[in-house]
Image (cartoon, rainbow, N blue to C red; front, side):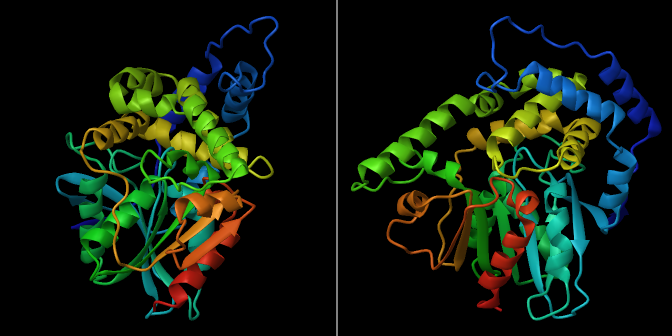
Length: 372
């Protein structure tokens, strides 16, 4: 059974958030330190964001923007799954499943839903679920919610909505779900489109084979990406092994949750663009109000211990869109040029639907246009 859903955060929860932000404690600065993000998000940056969250951010306005799209919940495999389902005015539009990643939410796609559902030859019926343990796909029904189980749940969701054949798109965890859907259900998935950024190359040699004939310049860029990932992957190591430890702070301290997410948004967005404070704080607020900082961390733990890889090859047509990229990305990720649809963009970054929505929409349309 599917139920209509509206976001209605109680005023008492907003008042509690305001109180906690007012009474927040911040670390003392160390004399001589430069606030350059080299040790993570600087205290002053956290303080400024927390003050804006308390005094300038309008949650009710953002809540109304989220509620402008039809939302629903359903129970699959014992778990509440929250999703947006926005049908195009064009009856024969192509069903499209959009899956977010970490540290994101269904709100990542707000700027692309309208354009994707516009009537025309490239119209889509759009379905945007929240991953189990994220946003309003909470509380968790029990252990074991990771990539493979989520993929099965989302396939069932599309069945319940009457979509026997559909397209799939996503980035980060969403890319893993998208690829696995194609591997398991090639008769249902007409094509997969994933978005990524130049940081992806850090996985070469770890999850992907590394080309043997890289030039010195290409090897240098790969080494830099690996060093950046080594310096920034602490969040993943912690959540993949001891998620309950960080869960205490993420659930009890809004400033802790804010710093945990804001650092990643700063690190993974394009330095020349990025996203607005309101969009960032909408995401942080969703994590805070739903207490999903803890269960999102647990998803990464379950994935790390599931025995399933993030990549699942299939013969289903695949398209890639890489943002904030350079030529070395395809050289490493697709050295034989097997991916027929490959798009490189200097703009955007890890959160393409928020950073470069027009580019992402155009690329999704162009890729699936050939498969309709």
